[in-house]
Image (cartoon, rainbow, N blue to C red):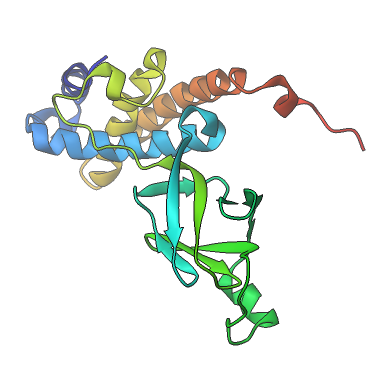
Length: 210
């Protein structure tokens, strides 16, 4: 389904109480995008390989900004040091070993800051960063191919939107409406989770024996 079809379905389903008057596309889109962000995050966590992209981040004196906004950093490699994989360590933990954060040399760890990365020890380099991008907000003109949820499960977006709408207006609705929309969303999301699980490489699904 494209976004206009999903919007039409949301309007058709919103028949209880105050939600029955919803005919404002901008308002419907706000709830649709709330639901989309929720489902996208679940999908990206369950199957990051579906969304994986790569960007270079230029580090100058231990800090650098993302060229493209990031939903989640998957890993970090130092391109100038044989693509060494850096460990993710919080700046607070590193500071316990280097109180002034003044050590220099090839970086061996990174931390995430708003809009970019910091590395330790301090150096200037270029990092290769596999990452999951932020979802692009849906509009009434968004095509089916641009909705980054498996097509056969687009119905989950309708119910995610209806659930967030019902939750926002729970003081004006009977409790059964909120429960119904949440239960329907949860059922559809469980089905999507199973679909995403089927996409995982078999080695990722093996049970470890202890």
